[in-house]
Image 1 (cartoon, rainbow over the protein chains, first blue to last red):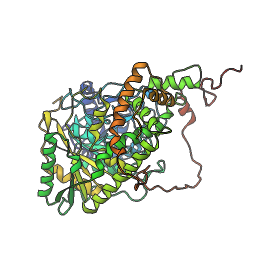
Image 2: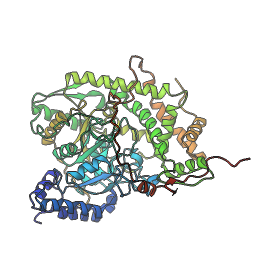
Image 3: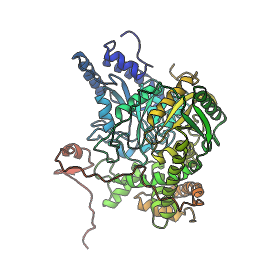
Length: 487
Length: 100
C-alpha cells in the first residue's frame, strides 16, 4: 500500500479499491488499528466487530479478484449506531436491558450497505434508546468530542458522529428522531442527514418514536453523505411506512450550484442562538447569496412550538414502544414471584433514568384525563407546524437555520437539568414533526473553537435540492483549524 | 388547563409503566416532569381547533400484500436469546396466584 487511507473520503477509498490500488483488507486493517489505538480516550465504539469486518473485506477483495464490482461503497469502512440490529452481533441500544442480546436478523440498511461493498467496523455509542442530546445517557459511559475530550459530541448518535470526525471511518449510520444525527454532526464538525420520513427503511432500527424516527448518514463531506443515502434509500416490504416509488437521484446535480434557488432563513430559529452561531449563519447566507441564490429572511411562526409538541409526542410513542421490554422474549429478566413482579423488576433494573423519565412522561401524556390536554393538543400543533412549513415552501425551495443553538458544551453541564438538555434540540425538532429532510453542514468554528453546523431544510423528498445547496455551502465554508485529539 | 403533575400522579404513571421508584426518585421525577410540562404550557394557550391531529407524517393507505408463504425468523435462533425457554417455547414465571 502506498499512501494511508485514513482521512480519505468514501468516494476516494471506493475508487482505489475498485481499481485495485489498495485492497479492502488493507483499508480495514488500517482503520481498525486506529480505532484500537485511539478509541480508549473517545469511547465512540461500544464494540468492534473485527472478525466480521475482516470477513466482509475479504468478500469484497474476492469479488474484485474475480472481476466483479462490489458496489459504490467497495471496501469503505462504516460505523453503525448500536440501535441498528446486526445478526449474531450484540446490539445494546446502550441499555442494560439489551446488554447481552444478539439479534436474529440484520437491519435492512445494513444489508444494503453490505451489498454495496461497505465494511462494518462495529457498533457505536448512543444515549440509551437514542434518548438524549449528548451521549451522556449511555449506560456504558459517555462518548467524548474528538476536538475536545472535555466536551460532549452531541447526541443521541454521538458515537457515530465522533467516530467519523475522528477519522475512524469515513461514513457512519445513525438515527434521527428529534435531531440525533444533525446535532452531533454539528457539534463534531461533520455532515449529518435526516432523510424524508419513509425514504429509508426502519426495519431493524430499534423503535423509539415510530412516527419520527429515521435512519440517515454521517460523512466528512456532503458528497459522501449523498452517496451513502443513495445506497440505503428505497422501498422495503419489511417496513410498511417505507415509501414506494423511485428513489430521487441525489448525486447527478450535486455540483450544479444554487443559481436562482430561493433560500429562506427561518427567523424563529435564530432567536437565542450563541453570538458566533448567529454570525456563522449570516456568513453562510451571504455565501449562498454570492453564489447566485436569492436569500431572504422569513417567519415560520409555528416552529417555536415544536419543542413542546415533540416532548409530548416522542415520549408518548416511546412509552408504547418500550412496553415490549418485559423480560420474556429477549433482554434482561429479573425474576420475581410472579409475572407482574418480573416485569417491574426487569424494567426497573434494565432502564436508565432518562428512559424512565420519558416513559413516565409519555404514559402521563396518554393517560385518562390528560390525553386531550397533552397528547391530543400536541398532535394538533404538529399539524400547525406542517401547515406553517407548507406556506414557507410556497415561496422558497429550501430553508436555512442553525443546527444547534450552541457549540459543544462540557460533559456534565446539562446532565442534571433535563429541560435544558431538551432545549438543545430546538432547531432540529420541527423537521421530524413534519417528516421532512434536513442536513447539517459544518461551517467553521464558534465558541471555544468548537465546530458550528448550519442546517438546510427541504420539503418532503426535496433531498436533491437540499444536497445541491449543502454542496454549495461546503464550497464556501470556513475550515475547522482545531486539531483532533490524536493529531 | 390542568395542573402539571403531582407526586401521587408520578407514582400512578410509574405503576402503569411497570417501574418501581424509590422515595428520592419519586421526588426527583415529580420536579423534573413538572418542569417539562410547565414548558409545554406555551401550546396550551394556542387556538388549535382548526387543525386536525397528525399522528403520522405520511398519508398512509392500508396495503394488502398477497398471501405468499415465506421463511420467518429461525425459531432456535430467536429462542437462544430468551431469558428462559423449553420445548420451543418461552418460559415465564407463574401468572396466576396459588389456588386458595
